[in-house]
Image (cartoon, rainbow, N blue to C red; front, side):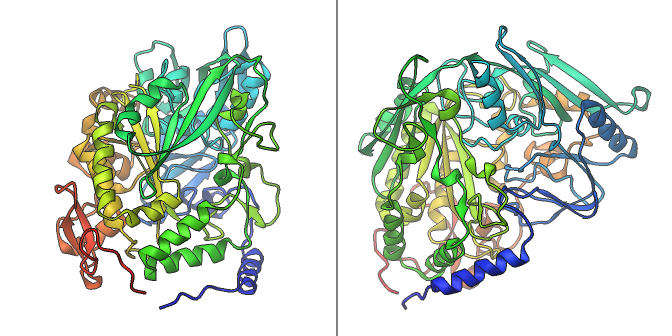
Length: 592
């Protein structure tokens, strides 16, 4: 059956209607919305939906702009015995880290805690409030001739938010690519007894015994007020992307991170291709003023995006493997500067691209969008309904990376077309992480495999070849001992994960001292941390279709639609929802 797409005129009407009925602006929306001033609120994430699709409510929100106001906000919640959670400016954590649970909790937003406190160029230290954006911190450091050596690739995260989830870049060199490894001081506001005014500021300097807990905390210890980071003299980087086939990826996947300080790789299994990022530090005198402006993180015109989403939905629901692969190939042929890098901020003229660290390490120009009534926005802006995805990131121990790649190849070789949709979104991005000094940081050197893939707006709706993605994830987690990223992933990825962290007990001891009544904890965080033996997995009909559980019964899938719980094709211990209408392994769907 041929698929019928909407016409450009229809798209224009849809977009115009959205612009008329949706109040807002091009920069991402606030994650906290209240019905009455700062009361009767809801909180969500950047995509407008948590993995379980539940609406998160809170009785109120406060917006402290000083540490004194922050202390008062924590004290008020503690005196009332209210649950508290922290919301950042754009709330880029996908799980329910910012949800207090129930309807009576309080949200403390760090939106207005966004000032630089101190920049000591001689000591190479920068101190800022926790709501400062990574983008602004990098610019401030560069203005003083300094640089943060590593960071996530997205510059729209706040310092407090990225530390809470252990966000990172890519490096096995030195202290590695995680920002928390460069924290040398931190001020955190925690609950206190009435005799101490219900809230107290704890100052944790470099070497303090509790800093290892506070610098990756999932937000359950209190509210970080200020952070001090150790910087380095400003330097430049020289970057080249190299595309090769994946025939020797088992040999390269662990070695590449040792060869290049900022190296990563993007693997498209269906195409059998790998794009290697050859990225190294060079002297600041090297010629070049390169700029990172990745297409995914730029402002996007609203026109056409609703239409594109509708086409994607039709392919997922009714398309063939051939049609999905053709659509993926067409998208990959669209001309654009390689990976968004230009040699001078305007034009790409060739490799290597050489530029200052703060211009190369992270990007996110869509948050700089002018107010234009949603004519343009970040790609994922939920007000348009044009992009809706899952994002999984699992760090496989470096010692197991080659075996994991070999198993994914075996899965791919059964039918390469099952990977086309994943390839279209960049495939598996592999970044390198050093063993961390933080209790909830990665306990050993690892390769972080990051994927994004289609999510339906309809709960429980099947995804094309979801069983392949689910098997891949379970393989990374359980066969190869992977660690889920605290700020990404679906529920089932966190089930039992805390048990793989040798210092989890030390973290919980600090948590018990800082917040003995669990005011900053929620049902979700207790489940993720395994408190009282609870689990984040949800046992109900259809739970495995949404990644809320690993199926153990057909009812966890969608038997009425032909999806049953079956073993994985390569990792037989996996349990995935497979369609009873799928062809045998290696066969190709060619029916319409």
